[in-house]
Length: 266
Image (cartoon, rainbow, N blue to C red; front, side, top):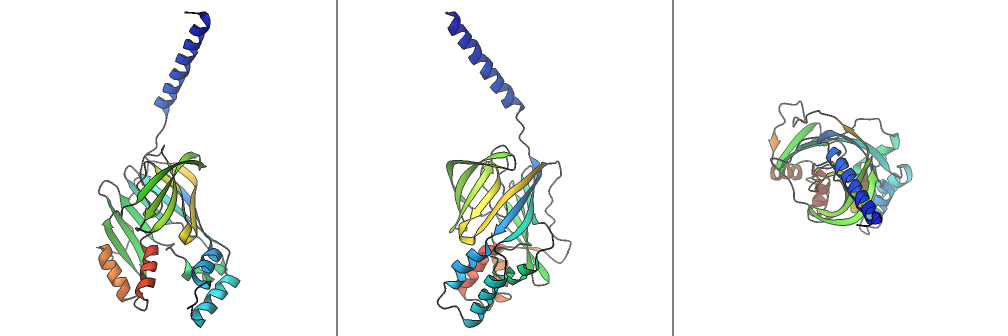
C-alpha cells in the first residue's frame, strides 16, 4: 500500500472514530420545560374572516371596526410545555396584558387559558376549559394527525428542527418543526405525532405562530391534575360538545359553532 493511501485510510478511521464518540455521548433529554411565545396576527385575521363578509350585520361590523381601529396588530401570549417520559402538560403563563387586548379577545380563534395534559402511553388527553365562572374537563382519546415530512430545517431554541406539514381536525393545515434530539412526540396543545418534540408551529388559517424561546432540561414529573375544584370531573368530548351547544353557544348557527369548536379542540 502506498504511503498516501495509508494516510488516507488512517484519516478515515480517525474521522469515523470521532463520529462514533460523539454519537455515544449525544444527549437525548426525556424531561424538561419548553417556553413558547404565541403570536396571533389580529388584524390579518379580522380582515380575512370578518370584514370581507357581505352578510355581516351592523352591530358585528361596528364591533370589528372598533377592534381594527383600537386593537393591537398582534396579540402575544406565553405558554409552557412540560414533558416527562411519555407525558406532557401545556398551559398558559399568567401575565398582565395591554389594555387594548380586551378589544379583540372575543375574536381570538383559540382559547388562551386552557390546560392540556397528554399521556402517550395511554393515548389519551385531558383538556381543562373555561365555562363561564366554572370549568369543564374533557377526557378523550388522542386525535389523529396526518403528517408529511419535508427537507426544510430551522434552528429553534438551540435545536435543529425538521419541518413537517400536517392536517389536524381533518381540515386545518399546520406547519410544525420538531426536534429529533428530544424523543417525545408531543407539542403545543393537542398537536402531536412526530418523532421528536415540536418546538414551532404555524397555523395559517388561524393566523397563529408559536415558537419555543427556551428549553430547560429538568427532572420534574408531569401530573394530570389540572384543577383544584373537586366538582370538576372528566367528561367525554361528545358530552362536552353537547353541553356547550345547549348552553354557552346555543345562539350560534351550526356552521359557526363548528368553527368555534376548532379553538376548543385545538
